[in-house]
Image (cartoon, rainbow, N blue to C red; front, side, top):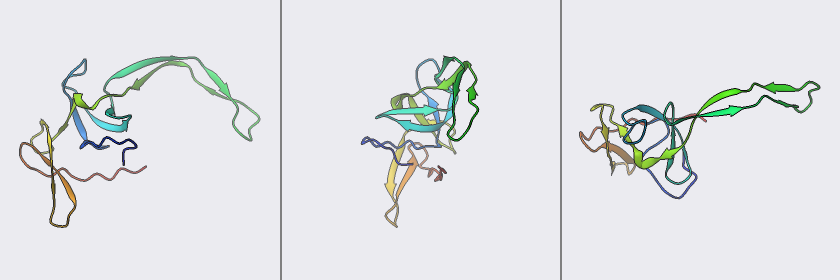
Length: 125
């Protein structure tokens, strides 16, 4: 998935990352999406609770309203990219990412510690 903002990052959707600092330090999760410049949403990390009232809404072409249930929702909120590091599949440790160009001219992401190539993940929309 291509990010919609100008800042580029080596972290991509679907990568396993480890949190470096904050209340969730040491936890691991997968990147759900990149938001705003320098922000990332990781599954199961930085969870906020939202209290929501039940709401009725009318769907187009329907005579009866649907009801959104109320309650306490748990939502993964965005936090800074600087607080996460990608986990190498071989080392199983948080590492920095090196990038190189292959012979065919394509950019590759490598582990900064053991130079293992990160697998390419195709994320369906």
